[in-house]
Every structure is written in C-alpha cells, then in structure tokens.
Image (cartoon, rainbow, N blue to C red; front, top):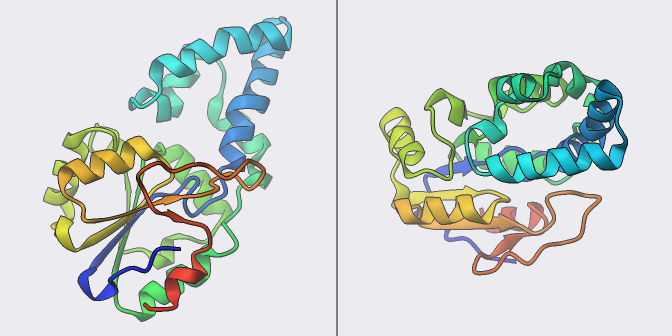
Length: 220
C-alpha cells in the first residue's frame, strides 16, 4: 500500500464511480440491464442486442458522449435515466470510503469530486449515497464540455478551482484518466485495485493502487 507524503498535499481530487462508489452498479447497468431492456424494446435476442451495443460502446469510450445520458437516450431510443432507476438499489459507497473522507476533512485537506458522470447520473447517485457534504465542490466534466481524458478538462478545472497540480492528489479507477492528469502535472496519483466489488482485482500498470482507503489514513 503506498505511503503518501501528506505534508506535500493540499488538494485531494477524487473520482466517483469505481473510486468512491462500487463500480458494480455501472457495470451491471451497461453490460447486463441495458442490453436486456434494449432486446425487449426491439424484440430481438439478448445476443443480438449485445452484438449491436458493444461496438457502439467501444466507439464512444473515452469521449463525453460515452458518459452522457442524453446521448444514449437519443442513440438507443430508450429512457436511460428511467432504466438506471430500475437498478438504483445497486448504488453503494465503498465500505472504506467514508472513513477516508472523514479523515481528509479532519486533516483540513481541500477535497473536490471530479467525475465524468453526467449531472443526471450524479444526481441519482447523490439520492442514494450521502456524498455531497464531504466535498467543497462536485464537478461533472459535462460542466466544462471535455472529459477528464482531455487536457482541456484539466485546464478548465484549474481556471475554475485554482489548485496547484504539484500539491494535489488524484485518485481514479481509469488508467487513461490518471495518465491525462499526470500529463497536466498532477504530482500524486493513485489507481484503484478493485473498482467493482464483484469483479477481479486489476493490474494498475505503472500506478500504485488503493486496496483499502483506511490504510491511507494511518499517516494522514
């Protein structure tokens, strides 16, 4: 488990899905629930629905469209917001996350949520999980018009909240997004070993990874 130089960190930037929230909800929605509903809607087999959807998902991955409920509602002619509500009971905070958020507050760190999730998705999750009180700001990349994978997101974020990349920690479950943050100059970066509680632990390549947030608290 990485030991962080907390005395060199003023701002903590945290992703939401897969980082603070269990990614099981999102994976179940996109890979199981949506294909099932799509198949029902179009009167086709589940296998054919998956064969139509997966190339579309790959085509838009890493773009703002991928995270946009309005885009998918138009593209698939399905009420994505309403379909997400059907499985909203799966939205859950990681068991170790709240203790970490509390410790950050007690240590006086500046804590900002930065998510690629559309405001609709963010609102649904905030209905189910009490996250907002822990953060100075809750920022969706849709506010800026660029996903976190894009350097223009980071430029907009810096203009918006005036943070020092060299004195910031960023935690995200996406390696491509962590690389984008590194390019921008964010000094302290952590991946997440197991974003989906129902999935396998992942190899996080060049990034140190969080396995249990409580371990980060010890020297905070």
